[in-house]
Image (tube, rainbow, N blue to C red; front, side):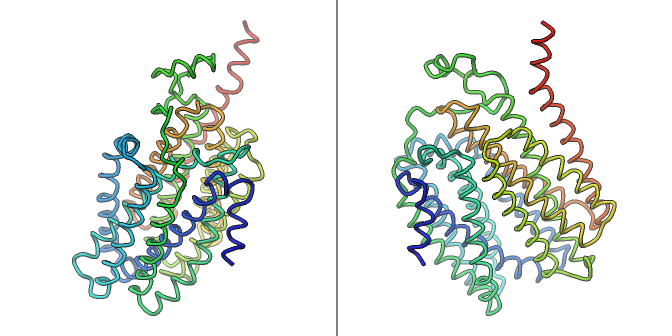
Length: 428
């Protein structure tokens, strides 16, 4: 079985470039994340009253993301100055999660004082890992492979590991959450070892510059841009800025809908389903949608990424409007599938634009900074979903309004980007 897995991960030059090692590490750490999520959801979320759970989730958002937001601009430069910076960062985040899982396994049955700080620390380490891994991927691309294809393979590998790990986590959780957390610690120890074994190329920052996530033109002459990398030439361009705004909107809506539905079903059964069953069915719909988005992104590759992103945002907007008018289990599940598919497809199109419109010297920095922005957007959306009352029609209506406004703004930006310059040239 391991040999078959390696044949898949090492295909298309991934073994020689180092992408295969990143795929295997991501699959293992992704399995550990789902094991922790299942253990905490069953013990910390569904075992307490909704009002108490709401305050604890709000505390998680505050404790994990405030330090993360303040330190995010410093993480990249700090790691670049460390010997073996990126491998070290990912190994440390996996090791921290392994140790904290052991702490949680020991304290979760009695609800000890150390349980909640350990859970918060584990989730914060997961965010830091996501940013570090984002900076690694451009360094391990096989010849002729695009960021879209590489990230599509990473997404599909993570989905496969989730499918394998979920029944294991549920089975161990039936014995006791400590068993699931103990097994997660073992998985994260393996992930630590895999992070250390990544090729040394991922630590190289030779020639890299800090990207500016703004749309000012980087200069018409590519050779001049490579030889004179001043601050103006580090901008990512208008297409990437358009894509970042749309992706941040979709990621924020994903966070909003996830937490909103999770608390809604605690108070109002959805289609006769309640608590863990309803959340599980909704999560399955999101999972299926995400898989479809990854497959579509791989098939579409780099074809008209701005249009794909705009269409994804418009689809999510229309679906949310319909779900608000015809609120019920079927429409919520359809919305969940679209909420999984649209961000996945839009993110792969963003990767295509980062590869197409950014200089190689700033691409790694732009990739890591975009990942930081998207993670923060998810948390802000989740905070909004947490603050709203448990009213399905109200919540979906507000979400539909926000998506619709951003869809219109994105469509206008796409029109200005595509047709306004051509119209100006014709007029002149």
